[in-house]
Length: 272
Image (tube, rainbow, N blue to C red; front, top):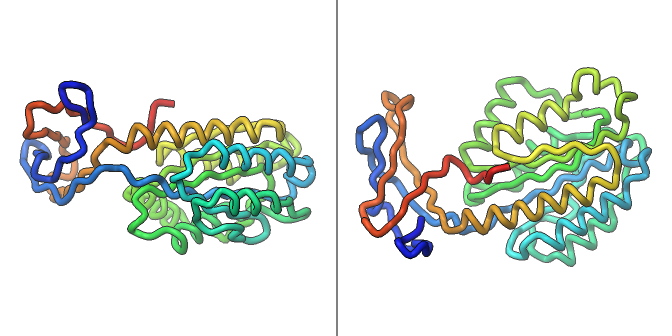
């Protein structure tokens, strides 16, 4: 949202917007600048594959680079997700605390991954409705995914909840076992979930074959999150309630002021 001088317009209210669905004007419930930084859960797979690949140093280096590059106003929570879900550092902007805890992360020999258990637990227990921009960054391996069974209905409800609340999921998958992993014949449960979650939430999905790729991808993620917040922070989030009979109709948005150039974005995602 910029004016004729290409400067951001930061003082609009819901009264300045006109929203129509299928040609029918409907009330704007609220509008606010999307200027609150994301709240980022960094989930680290410290399972057996990391141990066998000797990937611990690269994992810690990658997390250190991620925290160093990431803008300081972003809250980050650090979790390990092998054998069981452990909170290493609850959400904080204190990078020293996060780096200190990251330096204590070591792989757990013989432990399996708990990817979906971790996502469900952290979503339910660590995020609230007041968190307007939840973000998950997952560092995964291609070892065994041992989370409790979830039905298709449970998974679909979870994905819809992520979408409704504007969450993003980013995944890097380290194929430490490669062709030796029988799960790769089917793509691996975590690979299927990871691709689905990133596609549905507008996140990144990256695969690497060597541990040295971990710092590279985590640096990419941190730079993207910085750029994304910089661009999104001058946009407005508009909340409307669409009547059931109009739910399949197109939505249009206008601004009453003539000195404003309006551009509509369906989500926070930037071109990849």
